[in-house]
Length: 405
Image 1 (cartoon, rainbow, N blue to C red):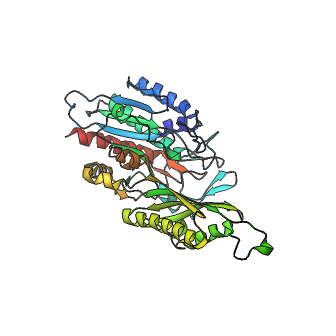
Image 2 (cartoon, rainbow, N blue to C red):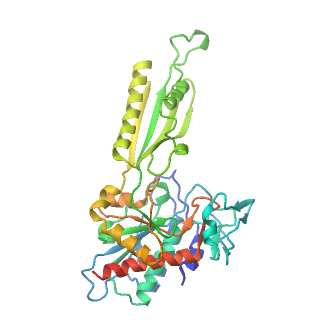
Image 3 (tube, rainbow, N blue to C red):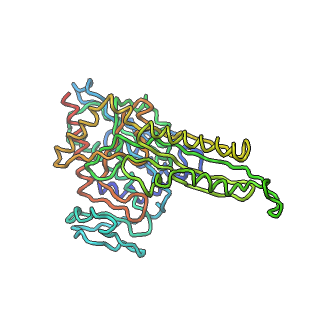
């Protein structure tokens, strides 16, 4: 079965995660796809395929005879789709021999070259889109489909290989995809997540990340008698925003440049709260941003009185490059295999986080590879059948390359 055919089967299964639920998985509907994958893996001969109580699917293809000492390679993708856009009742649409021009999707939405200049490069391919009413779910069901197709290729074509470890995780889109993966059971020496963009991508740098919340307690008195007494909590929240660099926001930064992103502000005279996410690729610059926030808290408490402002910082993840550097053979092998498929490797710093960051810091070095998909998390999401085939070729080449060792 082709990878895109699997994708068409998977995207119609509703698996959106829910960040408001403090459980893993956050939605039981993710088990619907997990169970399908377990049965499909078993039908391919992956006899130990299983799904645990937290919706982690795992399975292994044992090393072929004489390859037992080859490094065990892991391949990982996630089951859930992003809650940013509806993932229910997905209706994928195939456009064979796509002409590279603007394309009406439906629901008043048009896939345009103005928004997505790469569309011209997809001319002549079989383009897969939404019908304009939902996201597609190629993030990351394309990765799931490509790994499953890799497994079928390796088994049916009897390609020599070391141990291959497969995992499909829940809740990646809400930041919890790798937390409960049993690494001992998984058994890989290193791994690749298949969760990126174009088929030639390899990502091994990501943001350092934290969430910050300022809670402000004001002093509310009658405005007619407020002089030197009132502390307007809502105005203090605005003051906090004004104390941060105006140019260091997501709308003004790119590539490895970090930012302070105001995600929520609410309040009145008596109580207010202002929330940020903080991002930077550079560890020192990231730490400096956190120091700036603490200085703001200190300055405002000195100005308005102790305990007027309370800052809470929660670190979320760190840049995986620190853990990948000692194992750069993983990156170099992927680059070699991408090049062998006639593509120029595209090294992209992730302006976000990946399961690979969490896994790398848990002791499993894990860069990220492309899926051939674009415009994730919304109704303009699209991918090509040919791009997915190329990803499968790259994954297969990686398996073959390590089997030579």
